[in-house]
Length: 318
Image (cartoon, rainbow, N blue to C red; front, side):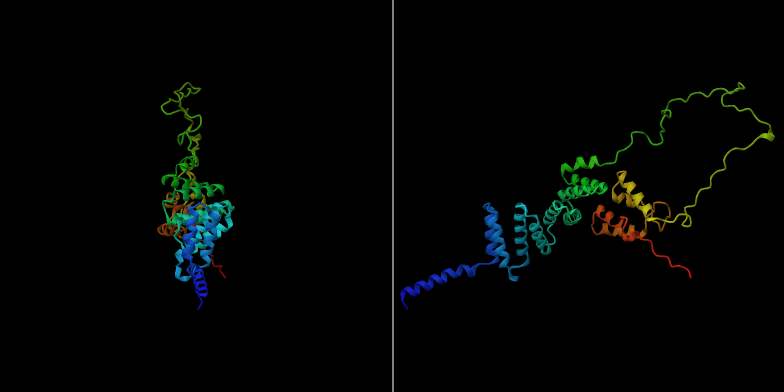
């Protein structure tokens, strides 16, 4: 074997070795380095190569990491549609990534898909109950839909978790309270102010005195006392819309969703106007027990189209 042939063989083996050494891991590392070197275009290309070389042995977590990294580059580059696709593929694997749910939610907001955005913000908060920025962005999404009760609740939570920009919004959306005291009628004398003395009657008697009429002519004009209406089940037929109206009035007055639901009478126990179906109250509490937020549970179980609010069908008599 000639020395020239041996040399050529060594060169060919050396050239082939890097190709065989290529892997998802090596290209992912390269992409990460290119990101640090501020070369996002090259990094995105390296991540794409890494994904093309991915094998089961590399592990699902490694694939999710590369997908999220490429999605982040595409997000910064303004390629929102592809970023959403990458984040979606990443979240299909890494289902507990609160930050990526939040980032995809923001992209949905930009795309005008507010309902989808709210869904992602809910998932982010469910994974991280103290995620203040997610509360703030969900509040903004609710406010854009004029759902001010939900927006106020989320602004309040965001403020509690340190997002100062949310505090002013929570205050601005708080219900306005009247400066007048309850029961103080317009033009009524102020407390402690003496009322004007009544004038004497025509007969010159003491103020307020009434001349007695003959016994035969006395007529009792006092109206008969009204009978109290029974609050029994036979008098008021519960209506789901009355339940919703009472709850929304309570929320608009400034109470939290949980407080308003806890105040609502249970129609199975007390049939009064504004009572709520027991099925809805129980479903709401179960959602809370699963660590669902008050706003989300309220939105699900106290909406006009909520399944728990549909009255049961009554069999027709023959």
